[in-house]
Amino acid sequence: FWQPLREECSRRSLELGAWVIALHHDAPPSSNGPYCVRNAFGDIMSTNLCANNGTVRSYLLDLLEDIAISLPVDRIVIESIEWLPLRHGHHHEVFGMSMSPAMEWLLSVCFCSHCVAALDVSPHRVEELQAHIRRTVTNTLARGEVTTSSDPWGTIRDVLGDNFDVIRASREGALETLLAKVVEVINLRSSAK
Image (cartoon, rainbow, N blue to C red; front, side, top):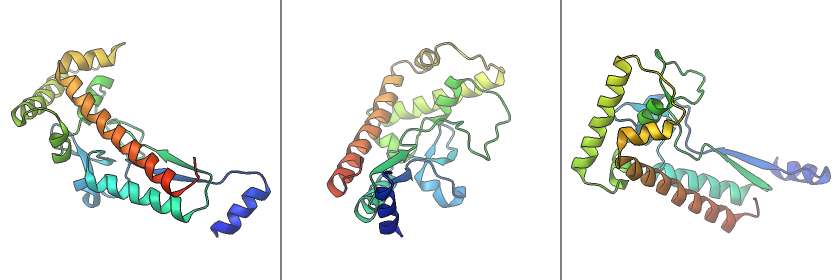
């Protein structure tokens, strides 16, 4: 299949691409729980795979290596190689309330064991941070506040204080190292862009 497709694309001066979905998952929650983001309440975000989870990272890198070795593609498009937000348009996504972007971001912060280990703070500070996020979200939603700030990052900074930089550095670090490995795997095994 692939070689004739490659030849036909070349004949027509078309590029052949592969499309990979990285950190989004659509299987039933029972099958992906250990690999998913867990918010401050301990809820599993069953569509969001955790970028700090070693199994998730290995699976993605192995999949990309397999594509790079096996498929004669010109490019590999990687979708959702990011920390997905709470609300991202999943076809079965239903929320019974309105939330500001700041509250949605707070609810997307992962506290799985991999993310807790990646935070550069004491276990006690992690517990305090998790409790602080739970209180903030609970109190804000109980008051019915859904104001959308013109500066949601400022709102998040105000809520988290110095912890914002700790969380941001951990999340960015996870993605930066994952992206570096993705580029390395593809460049070693394929001429795809």
